[in-house]
Image (cartoon, one colour):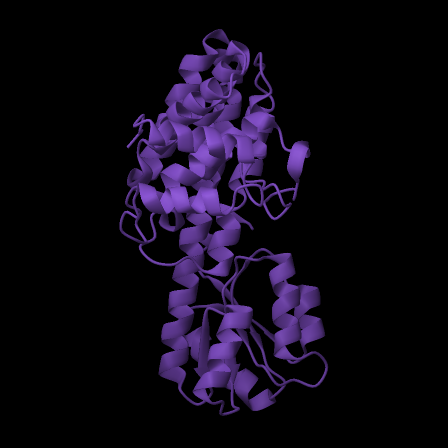
Length: 343
């Protein structure tokens, strides 16, 4: 994605349709609204010309060379964030449209012959993409500033890391205190399991900073009130790798970057980003993982009310040994049963 391209006077929209009349008409409609248009009659040609300056795509579904669905998939491989509008003359049942939306997650589905709806949808798509690009630009700027301050961080590394953790919470007010809560519970679990002081200290620090990678996630996704789309969740899932990339260059006495990278891995290999399983996941990450899940369930979140500690206990005990390390789960449940509750 080219964040600077959105600062151009005109946003650029790609129109793909094998019907010459529809292609020309759609182009004229959008040009009248001051958009730059890249018009193509075949999916193959459009894919060959697609670039990071495109801010939205208006895509026919039924085309002879490559179908719109095939073109959709290929464009999303190039840029998963660009909004794509299905623009079709085929009348589809509501159930068929619903299936298309679930499978492909287009920005919208617009019937041909309704220029006003098409225009409103394109405006919405371009604005949505612009918001993503601006967030990316801001995140890149913060990321650059963070890397440039590495030398200063080395002089007082723990204090600096706590400050960074507060920055993450400032961008996501709904989870304010989450990292500190996770750090406290993770420390208690590590102590309960009899780990060394060195490990306990490293786990506390990892818990304090485990979500630093969310600086790379657009704020509107972090604070969204409602269920995330598949694409939005995919963006959330970049944060362990992003956190690792930030922390790997900082000289610490513990491999904190690795702990952060692995805190969403699961015992059965179903986690991310690497699909690690069992003992291949560091014990420090397994501990932070359980503490993270507990604090994700118990309190209120933008998309749902607080679920409470019983629901959290049900989650970790029900997935003991499947998703979560059984020894870590047992230690956590013991802490809770002894009324050493952290909420």
